[in-house]
Image (cartoon, rainbow, N blue to C red):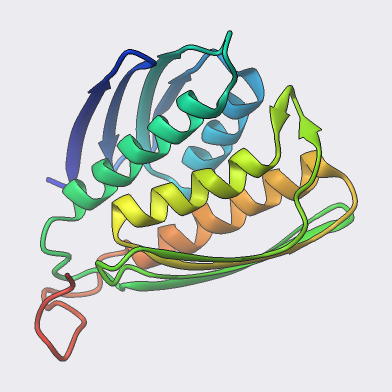
Length: 190
């Protein structure tokens, strides 16, 4: 079973994530409506079963909640993939949304790294746009995913949303089961 449960409780956040790579149901609860919308978009387009319950010190700002959800989600993906035997490993997507477009390439190599190319400045839905770059970077580092995201557009809502869609669709391809072997000449993806 490709499932995981991750709980993270600190003085700043209380997060529980249940993830199942082989079902399509999701329920997302965070104190940040736009972030909730982005996580729902991620779950919908990756076709991953995802339940997120997150509380955080949003009276300070949204950073802690977004960062710690990314940590927890990354760990859940890593745990659910186990030894990564049989996965496609690589995934890509080109996704347009109105005036925006995002390109995403993913390698579930076990070594997390984000290369982000695009301009995310300002605030959308009460959230500083820089927190979304930080979300993807933190998720990649904790999941052991190398990702390249390139985005262009003029509407910040669309720019952020198309990044979530492209990442989700690339991840969907990368976690697809294609056989039984680990796709690495080393025999391991760590």
